[in-house]
Length: 89
Image (cartoon, rainbow, N blue to C red; front, top):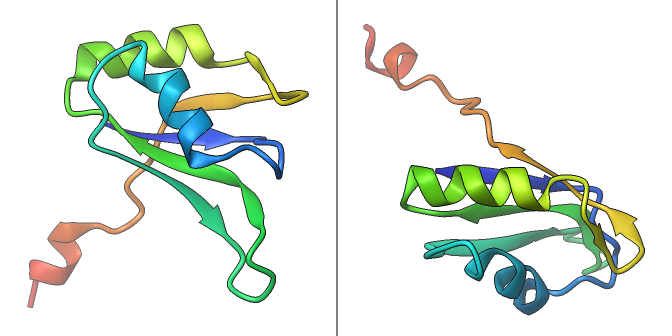
């Protein structure tokens, strides 16, 4: 399950995020979105956890938690690309 983590402090690192989520299960990936021009964090990240049950526990536990002075928001990432539309011709 792909999770969206919002409201991250600009100084939060991927390692810190990985440590927070790893307590709740296996991580497939963890990526903080960076600004291409400045190289600074945009304040959000995507975390992928292959086991849905573990991802749900992580959402419940970490949503609203204070991390580096910011209250993070964690939820399931929405799929914006519709695969069905690209297959229809």
